Image 1 (cartoon, rainbow, N blue to C red):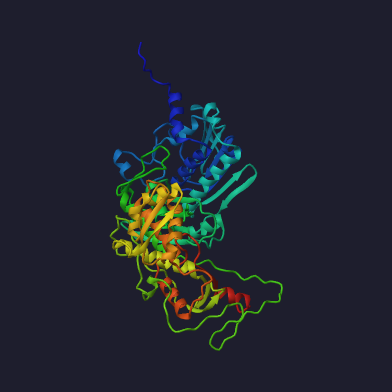
Image 2 (cartoon, rainbow, N blue to C red):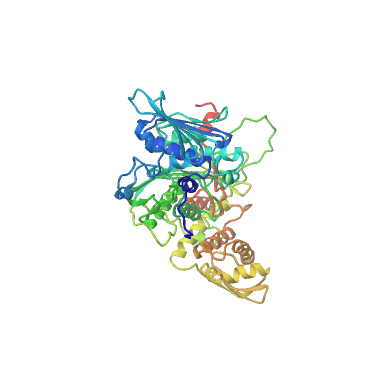
Amino acid sequence: MPKITRLPADLANQIAAGEVVERPASVVKELIENAIDAGARRLLIHVELGGKKQVRVEDDGEGMEAEDARLAIERHATSKITRAEDLAAIRTLGFRGEALPSIASVSHFVLRTRARGEQSGTEIRVNGGAVASVRESGAAEGTAVEVNDLFYNLPARRKFLKSDGGEAAQVSRVVTQLALAYPEIGFTLTSAARTVLQCPPVASRRDRLYQIYGERDDLMEVRKEAGGMTLTGFIAALAEQGPTRGPQHVFINRRIVKDRTIAHAIIDSYSQASIKERSPEVHLFIEMPPDALDVNVHPTKAEVRFRDQSLVHEVVRRALIEALGRSGAPQLQLRPEMPVTPTPVTVTLPGVLASGVYPNRWTPPSTLRNPLSTLQPSPPRTLPSSPSTLQDPHSTLRASEMKPMIPLGQFRDTYIIAVDSDGVAIIDQHVAHERVLFERVMEKLTAGRLESQRLLVPIVLDVAPSAHQALVGRARELEQLGFEIESFGAASVKVAAVPALLKAEDSARALRALAEDLEGLDRGAQVQDALQRIAATTACHAAVKANYPLTYEKMTHILDELRATAYSTVCPHGRPVMLRLTRREIEKNFERI
């Protein structure tokens, strides 16, 4: 007796449906994509109990005639493609012909549709994949699909759904993503008797972003064309002070995708500026020729394959790096306060008396107490890129677009107060100098290694076993930075040389900090990651400290060097370099505008 048997059609359909319909949000996504392909300009989405009880999607698209409506609920029936060659350049969101029959096989399904210009429409009811009725209906132009009691015939699948609130959140996320991709279409999402999302059609993605998220000054715009690709969107600024994790929406040819190549490019671009771990908020929209990618990878159509994966990675990475290099500093807002009696503090400036700023000491020109600070402000630099550099004439990273600033003095020997044509800036002198040194160190590493100075008497550093392993295990990377260390017993290391930019007395403290940084780094991490962490910690310990008085010349030197950096808004550890009080904010509070 044969062991292999043919499955009944209804069971085969239910198994196939499991690949397409994972949860109510999957149903919503498939129905909205069908509506968009049908030319809809307004969509009404309604869910009950997170979509488990009901999902209803109504659109004003072109609708279907009776014969097309009957075919639409049969597997592999589609109007999107007609031959195998069409798969090489998919231009629609749907193309498999699986969504409606899959959904209908695991629910009580109702389809009502009327083609534009027709006098009547069609209503089709399907229960668990079996057609219950087909009749003429007085439906409005367009299509309305009701999906009731999802997975009613698959209790094992239904019990794995999340709570009503959890499923409703997933539905809201999907509708939000599609609304971002199609600002010209109106979206309304209701849950029970509550309106969750209401977005009338707008002219631009910026307007749609405002509809969904409100005013977002913490997001900056991205634009780049290279390699046959156009990339636009909005990303979290470097100095953004909100959560380190945010939504990441990536669209390719207006299709929602999850792609490791792009995800890696996003993280890599932020890591060029800061070693602070974060999953930044991004909303990226990529357009490329349809034949440059394959969307026929998975039934959910959320995965893609690129014809030139390295090109996509480099274009995305470069676009974000260039945008982050233009990232602005956080802005301060003035708030009226009750009058208080201030404690007078006098500032000594040429012919000026003020309060709130500590004395600025005017002395003959001198340099910062740091070997690297003797260099004069250099031309704009670029950070080292990954080995696969895109050959694009516009891909070179420019220096940050800071305007020249005039230092006025110091506050508490820690913050430089400066002005430019845009307003007043408060600069953390340590963080600013740390950014300058970090980029200088990373630049020098591209040419080989950092200058090193041998110690007359080696330092023997007692460390914890884990720290010992971290330092000895990364000895080669430390050597590139100018450290020369070797194991000196189970819990000690001997340091024979240190970077020239680091004072000998700071070396022990810097190495202990490096051990902590490297302990948290995955052993399999790339050399570049380790070097960045070591460079960031070294720059931090070599930078001018807080509570350190600076001359006018030293303040000017730091500001000029900061202006020449690629990222002037955050230190390599993610702290803000400066805060700005804009000219508009000042004039508004003085009632001049």
